[in-house]
Amino acid sequence: MSNKEKFERDLTILLQRLTYTSEPTVEAKLQLLKDRLVTLHKENVVKINHSVMELVCAKYLIEEGYDVELEYGLNSLLTCDLYGVKSLENFIVEIETGFIPPETALSPLTYTSARLASKIIRYSSFASNFALGVPQHYILPFPLALAKPIPNRTILEIEQIKALCDAYYQNPPVTYDEIRNARIHVVYIIDVDRSKVQAVDPEVYLKMAMQKGVIFDCLSSEFEEL
Image 1 (cartoon, rainbow, N blue to C red):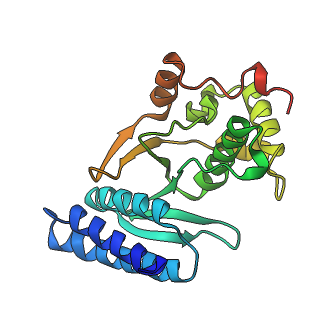
Image 2: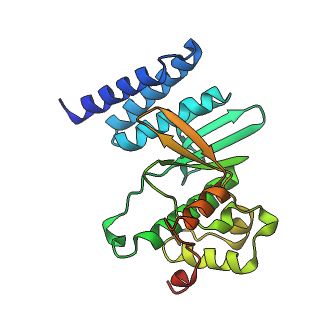
């Protein structure tokens, strides 16, 4: 079996799980999204571990009343993983699998924190609501300041996030205004095995992870000199 055949087979199996008790309209919408992923995989645009999470999250959003598109172009530079529209509200979800490129092997936490911060800052400006989707086995180490209500964000936190992002992303660099106005509204914990999604407040998500010692604040003193 070729890689392309296995990709389509795996998505077909997942679609059967997702639609076992679904309404026909939900099933039809998911079938179209699955077909799009298959086409994109043939073009070497998407991979299976990322695609299955997209499809599980898409079902959740569809059942919440959103019309959903996958791999949706926002402008000439940015393409988001999921784009949902409901009435006058739009929703962007970016899926995170925890991949670390080889060139950042000696600073995986710093790099991941910068990548997540950059995503929140760049993508949230295009939507009423922005979310990160994550598998159960991976904890997202994004800056706690980006989960706070915008008026509660301090100048020091904005400057620290700017330094964090600039260490890895300067084409183009994020601006102070973008950081000041950015916000993540929800974290989706995506359970592919059980085809379920759990929505968690991002501030609660990070505080619980920090209290358990799973992660620490990426704007602490360890990250001040990048």
